[in-house]
Picture (cartoon, rainbow, N blue to C red):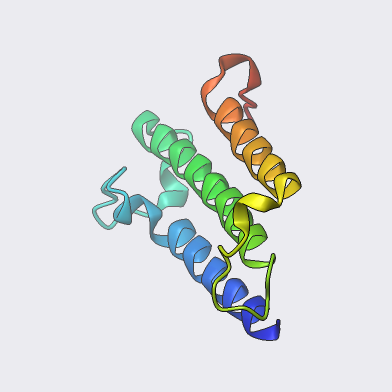
Length: 115
C-alpha cells in the first residue's frame, strides 16, 4: 500500500510541477524567448491565452491523475489491478461520472469558470 501511495505521489508531483514550470515550452503554447513571464501578464494577449490553456491543462492532468489513482487504489497489494475491474459497478459509475463532469466542465460554455 505504501508503495502505491509514494509512487502515485511522486508521479503526480513530477507531472504537475513539470507542467507548471515548463508547460509553455513542453506543450509549445508560447515561446518566451528569454522573457520574464511576470512582465508579460496582462500586456501580451497571446501569452495570457497560452497561460489560460496551460492552467486548464494542469487542472485536467490533476483530475485524471486522481481518476487513475482511484483505479490503482482498488487492489493495493495485487499486481494486476484490472482483475475483476468490470464487476465493481459502483467504481465504474464513479469513474464515468468523474470523467463526464470533467468533459462537461471543459467543453460546455455555461460551465466555464473564468478567474
